[in-house]
Length: 330
Image (cartoon, rainbow, N blue to C red):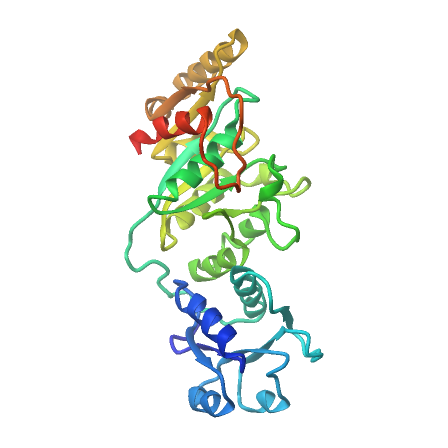
């Protein structure tokens, strides 16, 4: 990506141009500088000698846009009838519009590997949630903790399960999930960052990447690639916390746990659960992962009468109170 790359939002609908432009200007680490124009005269002034990406609406689009030297023209469909490709639905959440713009841009973008993704150098804290005990509210615990932590800073939730246990975290489209993002782990950091931005979604203030789907074989991904992935994720600008909802199907699970700043080991009070936890801790000692055990917080889940909705406004109840208590160490 050249340092002078520009994206021009050109729309004669001044209200939409203002609101969408404000959203784009508030996004960090985009591959362009952002300009907003509501007239063709302003557009020509903004183009200058550059080759901008132009995003316009179908009602504002005119054929002359194809002749002003734009590197790409992307049309937002507002029902005016223009069928110029690539075409994106205009009236949808701004984050979805940006995600689709990034997908189109990445198809043939020349991205400079030397781009510095996070100039501040600050890295997110990595929080692991893992247990050999089944049915202990691991995903619920992870997501609700993420929502609560969002009050302190920006949070990313990553599920390493093959099938997400919450319908609210399954997007209606099949446009990118964890396994798709892993395809770019050997790409330059800037390419990886832009692909990440095109896939990330948000639910009630919590960012997440949709989980892998069955048949994608993330269980075959080497431990070193997972480590590289997590180091890049934690280096992305803006995140304070990254929560890993981990599964034993991932290769190198103990090495991944070792990378975490804090680990929550969920359990129950029954005999089977206690036996599984004892066996798990014995394995950690046997294979010299005592450091993983030392930074693990064993959490015995209380009796729960109600589980809050992942996307609802009501964050209350026994489970939420329990999670708040566990967060005191963060």
